[in-house]
Image 1: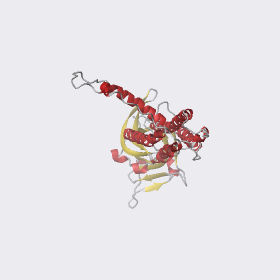
Image 2 (image 1 turned 180 degrees about the horizontal axis):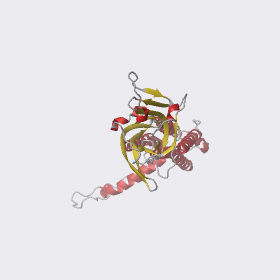
Image 3 (image 1 turned 60 degrees about the horizontal axis):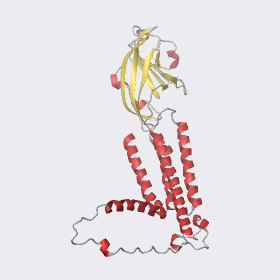
Length: 360
């Protein structure tokens, strides 16, 4: 983060009598000739003072010896983060300042105006919004040198989501929706549907690989991983759906071919090509044989009979209806595409609702 760090202290040696000048301002050249606090950032991995076009240091001395020392500095600090909700996460981080050489007996550090000492409009973060902040102070103990005053700035950070929406979520959603286009393509158009399915699967694999390479490497599952792999599962299932449709279509046509319901001049391979040569309505299907009704005296119970009608017929009919529905769908494989056009979007919409409600 980039911030302006301002120190205030009083040095009577720099006091000067003045009737007109309220203060005197100096640049970095005077800083090297006077005493200044040796404050450093405790968990800083890298920090530097900006020096374009000159060192961004300002020293202002007042007649009574009060001094304002301002530095524009960029700090890369260590923060222990939990990425389980990444990139929809919030993080608690702290920035700690401490004197390097002077312990509590030599130098006392404190916030001049309490919470008003920190202004977040002067702090710039590339990936986060600062939702809350809380300045505080305390003591730090070192076994070899003693106790030191330490200042804390506790931040509640919320990550910018717009970048990840453009780079990750929107392309993933488009790939999933694109995989549903195959449900509207004729099931005999094998090259079109297979190429579309393989293209969406490979594109999803590329997205997952690219996102994983740019994300923090942790040993647990992140929120973005759940979304990507769930979307990949939807794309993969669309390919499996066509494999099932293709298989059932082939089985259905082979049964018709063996039963003699398809003309002898029909080439079975034409059923798998999108050339318009073969359709279901072109097959002359023989009607189902009529089932003769049993004699009325065996079907209709006697009027004088007190025996109740059998109650197991409903159970048998229910079992038969389930098997019948399964066989009906298998023998009419085009219905799988019809159901998929509805079930896949509804399932993905339900997944998105649950996902964004959990992590938003």
